Image (cartoon, rainbow, N blue to C red; front, side, top):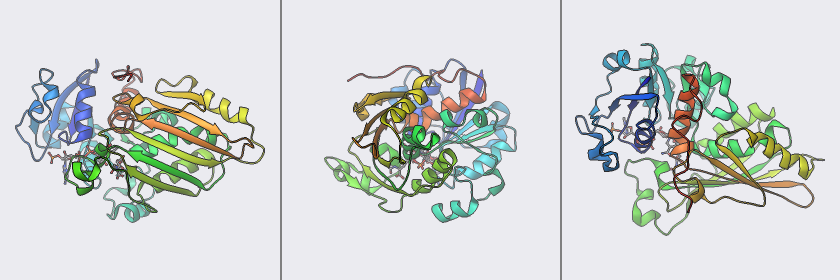
Amino acid sequence: MIRAAIIGATGYTGAELMRILLFHPAVELVAITSESSIEQRACQHYPALSGLTDLRFEANNPEKLAPQIDVAFLALPHAEAMEAAVDYLQRGVRVIDLSADFRLNSPQLYEQVYGRKHIAPQLLAKSAYGLTELNREAVTNTDLVANPGCYPTCVLLSLAPLFQQQLAADPIIIDAKSGVTGAGKKLNTRTQFAEANEGLSPYGVGGHRHQPEMVQELAKLGGYAPEVVFTPHLLPLSRGMQSTSYVPLTAGVSRQQVVEGYQQFCENEPFLHFLGEDIFPNVRDVRGSNNCLVGIHVDKECRRAIVIAVIDNLVKGASGAAVQNMNLMFNYPEEEGLRGIFQVL
Ligand SMILES: NC(=O)C1=CN([C@@H]2O[C@H](COP(=O)(O)OP(=O)(O)OC[C@H]3O[C@@H](n4cnc5c(N)ncnc54)[C@H](OP(=O)(O)O)[C@@H]3O)[C@@H](O)[C@H]2O)C=CC1
Ligand SMILES: CC(=O)N[C@@H](CCC(=O)OP(=O)(O)O)C(=O)O
């Protein structure tokens, strides 16, 4: 059994980790931590968990918890997670960090994007970027996974077939939308009911922090750093995310090459599904599941592809991907605890 703790378990990704891990056949959830809710039971915060666990929130105390666990999931805000990562790693506990603290390879870029000096820059080179499908070997062999952001997950999985085969030119225009849980549980004006309901609002226009993360990872796939214009929007849904990417194709590329590229990329992937040419997914199709669904349109002259992808931001975009990575790190089947869909309509 893998003994696990969730650090920052009162938040949305922490709750989603509880939902998944409590049903995982190879995991014993040993501890859940919180600073604000010590001694409260998990089901007081999330009544849906009633009957599934008697765990109570406790303080994050690495000295006490480390001997009891094999892995710590960090579901903390950016800049809060790096200290916890260092604390657990130096006590021999493997870490899966859901925040952005170990995603960017350069400490200078981290400081520029997140406005904080990195306290453990030496770990940036050692962490594995946890987009499982693209990085299995590194994830399997690391003690520190940097779980990707939800927008980068949706975009990178849907553009990887084009970049891996050098079929994509730039600039790439990405229009993306997320449900409000993407912003976390903390109070925030733009996610309050009256602000978000019946609305669709752009934010981070021209400067969202996920743009450099996307460029960094696309460059690893395609061999060049593409120009990416990324605009996210907030949708009045609790969960779900869609990205629409407009990608210029390199000269001479055929429709068949593009379509076969997607078919081959998704063929043996348990969570990636290519719907085909001109068949497009709805965010509803992945609600509660670890799937990423992709559809494409290629224009008549094969000059541009429009790639549309959906994920559940809390599952494939965060907690489901984290568990997929844990499975690899501990030599379990990648789909363990993550199989199945939760709704069809
Ligand atoms: N929501 C999403 O869709 C995704 C989120 N992520 C990332 O995962 C991490 C967790 O996100 P999410 O669960 O949405 O966040 P939430 O805001 O919902 O939860 C964060 C939790 O961290 C704890 N915490 C500890 N220290 C602090 C602090 N100084 N300020 C605020 N909270 C603190 C809080 O618990 P308490 O106060 O009880 O200690 C809180 O419950 C973040 O880094 C986020 O960017 C990544 C991909 C997708
Ligand atoms: C709706 C919303 O606000 N979403 C968040 C993204 C959440 C996420 O995936 O990513 P991180 O792990 O990088 O926080 C945002 O745009 O900042």
